[in-house]
Image (tube, rainbow, N blue to C red; front, side, top):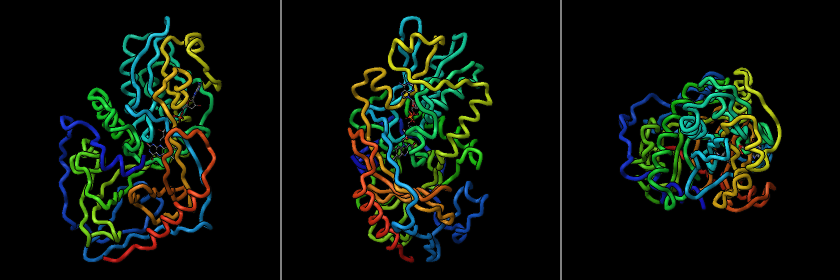
Length: 393
Ligand SMILES: Cc1cc2nc3c(=O)[nH]c(=O)nc-3n(C[C@H](O)[C@H](O)[C@H](O)COP(=O)(O)OP(=O)(O)OC[C@H]3O[C@@H](n4cnc5c(N)ncnc54)[C@H](O)[C@@H]3O)c2cc1C
């Protein structure tokens, strides 16, 4: 499984769901590149253009000496996609909200909105959320905003969650297998993405660590136009500044097919800490303990329970389809002048204030949290060769 697989083969949604967009394909007539971010520029929409022969993207400085950490996380992956549905357990109603694969930061607010809309209408009394990753925290905040008293029961708090490991790009990736998705799932995905996209926009800024970022998707093969990064992507209206860049319009040698668009980056260490603060400020209660089985859920005093346990749902609800996809990231020293993300096929680079994030690996079925040092060397070498090759155009 790799990123290219998802971009090229994956029609994100059915053709019937293809969204129209009011965003024009602008020809390059913006002012020359401004690549001097001050503290306030970090969160603003990027100001980068390649006009008049000015391909002035600063390269990432890749070397082993610049590494500050390498981390591993297990994506909660289900080939048929995330689960948002209700299940009755005795006198308790459980609403599931898990299985987001590589898109849990991206979709957390959106699937939580769907889950709350399923469970909350008509409910009286306190509510429980199990899990405090990106999904559990968004779910809990939406319940508080709807007026409920909320208790989160969780085995581990941030920073000890998978959500803290994520790169944090706002874009669905490694979400599911295109061949396993149903039309009903596609509808849920589109609704979740649309809600989450708007929700994160009102969180842009240093408090939540959310900012805008230019993305370059590179390929040696033509894009699947109905896929994630394609021109007919059902998420196209959520991809401002979308352009196809011709060979002379970008600094990436050897790549015939290049797409640009802007999206958000959500910095998990900042964002999750702020979300925990918001939950507490909203009167939320945190109980740090494992909820081991269905009986323990039924024993909770709250009779409406949201299951946001990520990969934990495999054991908790015997979900045979749920499987880990191990991902490893190497973080280099921060480079504030880097305002763009680049995704050259299977690898990717996202810039964050706490460092330059280099990915990525995708090992389906692997449960180990040990970094693979050989793979790390390969990723460093691949990125070094890529950034050393930047050209003028
Ligand atoms: C390397 C890597 C890069 C990624 N990059 C991105 C990205 O750029 N963009 C993006 O959108 N996504 C990304 N992801 C995916 C993202 O991290 C996950 O989809 C997301 O973290 C899932 O969130 P979650 O809240 O469901 O799970 P988690 O963060 O795992 O939270 C689950 C919570 O449930 C608790 N829990 C589990 N079982 C129990 C139990 N039995 N009782 C009580 N509590 C329990 C846990 O302690 C935890 O608090 C990436 C993932 C990895 C590994």
